Image (cartoon, rainbow, N blue to C red; front, top):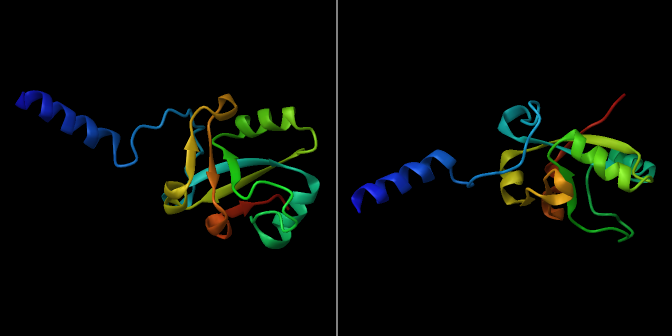
Length: 130
């Protein structure tokens, strides 16, 4: 009995406090400072808003308040192929604590992703092309 408990303890230590994550991540999926990189397919209008104000819920209320990010660029490209108006891919650096508070879905769109709540969106740093 003791051995089973010891084995369970070693397993829990090995997977860490956040539990196992089943997403397949690109090698560049870790952001500076130990955070996470995320990728989001956006329309031209949302891209202009991100350039001006960063990530935030649509001020006109025409979208979900949470912002979904794919774990990989390929995941965002797959989303873009399903929604042609979202023709731009925005890369973002998500602080580790923000990612830790986000809703993670390892199977969404077949690639995995996470949703950042409105209160944390200003902490997500967009990486925009010049």
